[in-house]
Image (cartoon, rainbow, N blue to C red; front, side, top):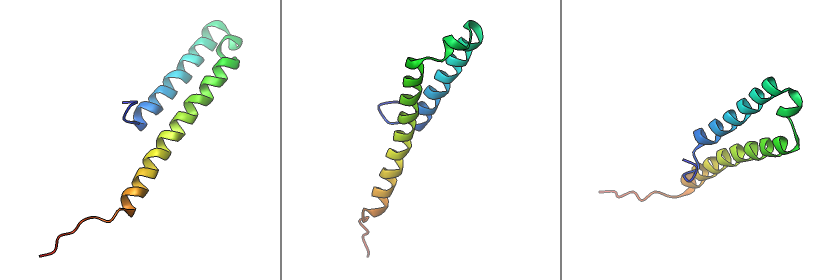
Length: 73
């Protein structure tokens, strides 16, 4: 799914990461759930989701600009 730039896979990965960080924070304390590395990964996942949606938006724009071959009889 990631190879095909799936929007669903990108959002699910972000949700799973946030859920795991929240779980870690509740079990081991807030300091364990939030750290420099966790913030870095959160920003990376957010950037991945944004990039995936932008990729599909760009592909749609390119598809709209491409003239289709219409055969008239």
